[in-house]
Length: 492
Image 1: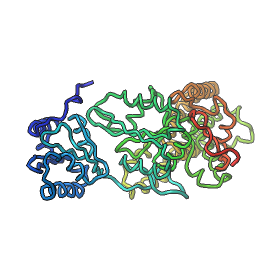
Image 2: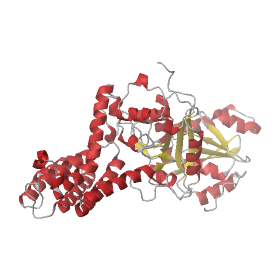
Image 3: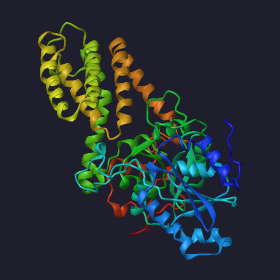
Image 4: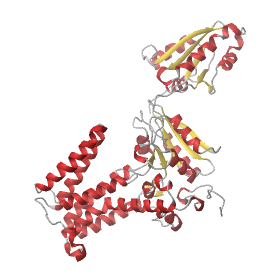
């Protein structure tokens, strides 16, 4: 790890401070770093700030108030106390080291140095540029709140605090990155979250040694989760404050990273990635129906294509009643190759849609579906059944609430198709068993990935399969080892 100047105290002479600031942060070179020097009661004062990260109106008010000290005060010996009382802001702290003062400066705070003093005042006037909270595109609901997390960590913690006004909610601020100094907030409820879990996550975050985390939350994810080359998501992302607040109440821990609108939820299981806020915005019966349809779609995205391919390659396994599933016309290319080509083609369309302006994306979809698909059938490249089943499988992947899980399932789907096409029934059964065994041994921060199915927990499995009415969900999931098991008194 590179050496830093963390132990250098604040210089008592402003001349030395100015030289150090010019050399260390580029005062006078970087246009976005502001510097003012004023004289109060015959003592020079230096003020440093980052223009794009501060509220300029507040800076003006602070300067106006400080300059008026010359007209209202006369005791120069008490200048530090006078200045501290004149700093009209709710967060004013003292910093004793230059490195800490610079870190605060680059985070958007004002740093004020006084000649002859070995400390600096740090005033929090941050005003990060960003957008207003709005509903996230990938987690929309018919009923429910329309706000969502933004790239501003201060706003994000406020959106969570608005929903949980518990004095035991903790938002611990950490910094990651030797150069980026990115703010990372660890959120949990002190008397609910497991202390060992909080300590483990905090320890792994503090152990990160890197220049910067430009990819924000994803970089943090890869540092704290030992995933190797596993495709399955071992953390859950959400941009909805209501979803995050609900997980806090269950005993989970949140990681909020500045510059990212996604919040990391830890620990998570496979079934956490199958949940959606819409299930809890409807009645329990409707929510259960929606959940089962979603489960069916997710399993179809993984198993429909290889299962159909198995019946095509070994038709003796197919009951006579289902002989109509085809294919009636095989085309000029073998069925497994057709399926793989069609799946890859859909991925082409998905990637193209991401990079296509919204007004043109609809036209692109129509061209792909009507022209390319139909012409491919007419020339004998694809059979109609292949297009049908690949389309149903693709729809199932889009129904999956977690984007990361949907992409992982596509990889599993392609492996299923390849080995089923080569080895038939033996290939299908082998991949299926390998898939289940792989998920069984997978862990997210020491949490079994297939819980509550394996290891089996009857009560939790009931809550997984059914959307239980809120008055009857009076216990927290045991997998997070909460300090307080009950969300409300028993019997309510």
